[in-house]
Amino acid sequence: MLQLEFFPRTELKSLLDFQSLENSQLSLSDRKRLAHFPEFYQSPKSNDVIRQQHSQMVDKILGFRMKYVEEMLVAEAQGFEPEGSHETWGPALHQGVQTWVGLDLQTLQTPYSECLRILQLLKIKPYQHIIDLGAAYGRMGIVIGGLYIKNSFTGYEYVKARVNEGKRLYKEFGFARCELVEQDLFAASFELPVADVYFIYDYGQVEHIDHTLKQIEKIAHKRPVKVVVRGKFTKEIIKDRHEWLDLKYEGKFEELFSIYTAYIV
Ligand SMILES: C[S@@+](CC[C@H](N)C(=O)[O-])C[C@H]1O[C@@H](n2cnc3c(N)ncnc32)[C@H](O)[C@@H]1O
View 1: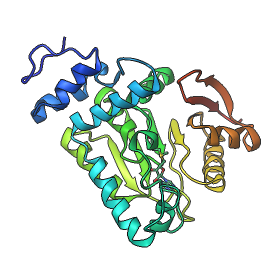
View 2: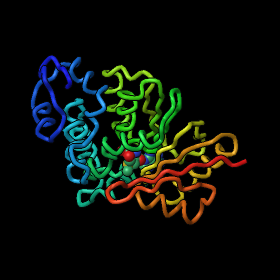
View 3: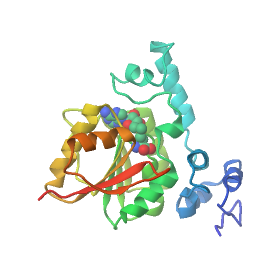
């Protein structure tokens, strides 16, 4: 059982347990303790609705101000497009880049429990480096910072306000090996760094994802890589254009991700 200053006997078995944590004023040391506890990232049930509710509570317990940041982005976007929606606000604000401004936060991001499951399936070894391509607020980095303390993480994200918010939490929690970087992945000047694992959750248009996959292919000529893909869109692109990737694990039912490997010799 988890020992917190605020709740000396804390269980993380039901959403109600998370709810009582959410509604209390936890000290930073309690929040830090929670962040290093695997059960904290485990959803009480594996269905989509509960996983999203659990993630929403975890965001709040950690102290993320995502809702506020997104509301600011929507307000700014409405200045350009009063009648717009999450389909149009992102491109209107960010030079045509689909940043999904106004989209529900739980749809925009991978649930914590799925980040945890992915990392467990990958059997991450110490000192391996993980990159999230289009990281939003960097949830994957939170799980790595909390549980995989010998690993490093870089999340690239176009939207500065999301990067700043994620960075604020990484700093508060002392996740020194995790970083979020403001970056347009499609910029001509951007050279994708080497990593052991690349994570893509439908970050942009077809040509953007295709461009990124070509960059990973180049790296796979030099070293083995694993690519985790969430969302149907990127999986279709791989099926049509990137046969060099070997499908190793295909999530079924409520698991929305697949794992590919490649080492092109
Ligand atoms: C569907 S979200 C996934 C977030 C995160 N990877 C997760 O799974 O929780 C995709 C993210 O990619 C970002 N994005 C879209 N186009 C981008 C680009 N060209 N460069 C960097 N980030 C981009 C969006 O702003 C958005 O935050």
